[in-house]
Length: 439
Image (cartoon, rainbow, N blue to C red; front, side):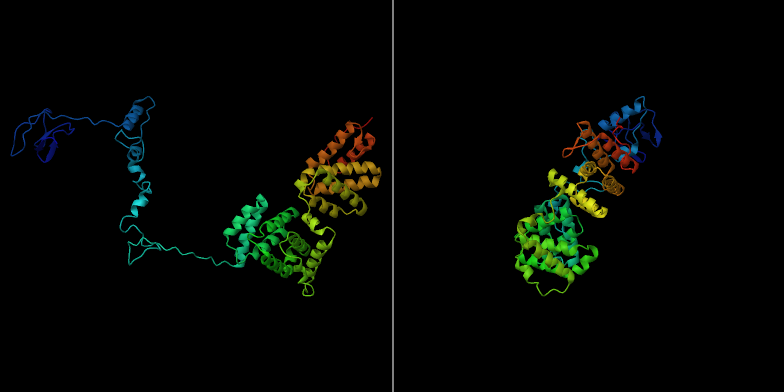
């Protein structure tokens, strides 16, 4: 510290950056020195020097910006609230290691140091011991959630719905195990089957696979028996939402018997003890599936094979049978249902192709008008998209251009195909027929 000079009422340090030195309240003419000792005042004979404050790097940048042509001046408020180091030697890191300032959580690892301090435990903590605050022994109590059957079934249904998307039975098993349903595991069977009744056959097949994979891990024979018994008793309510519930439940029971999840004697225990007509239909359906020749083997495909895994020849054969049945019954609704059960919307152009080929084979007006009527109904219901409809007609045109040999070796004149295309254009099946009128 420099020598202290008391001039009037204000103390002045010998190294302070002052512009003028006050003497008796008046500004002195000379800034070089202060002389004399007045009334006990320390005499300063040395020259009062001003020491320039070294600007920080951040201030230097801002001053250079202020002196530039752009005339950009950094706001003083931004400099004031800056959390970066101001001494010019920092690395630009937050002050106090991020532990200071409003809204900070403290430095990394500070929570470990707090445990060693007295009174670090919050009094609102459930583990806080008023009699012995320094006691660090915490007792953890396992609390079992008291959930109703309805709440548990909602959680199981959500997991089964996710399984329909990813198809991983092991992942579903792990999720169900976290629910701790060991005492009420039969609700897994109930929830899975009820949800599968509202979905398509491919999802029902996935449900049967899931129930078979859970056997021996999460589900055992008593769980399957109790679950199916609950479903049989609830058939009167299930029929209101799914009219085909008795038949679907019968398929599930027969499939579980084929997968060795429950023994065949399960059906024998209901003979003569069931009064509900829906339950009688369910038991009769299961018994008929098990008693048919090679029934256990055929039950692997009780829900059919998924559309994406079926061979092309099988799909073509099913569509030909569908068209032949339609010609004999003239039932458009039944033909539509059979087409939707195949679950191959990307292969509907094959139905259009086979319908045209069949109309060419028959070579009569009735077949042509019925095929146009069927395709028009499927087109208006947007079951067959315009893209699939046009693709079917284009396939016929390509085969015509390659030698008039259609499908299964059918030969015909191009005039027949052109007339069929014009009739389809008039009914609105296609916007413009792709073939030119023959000469």
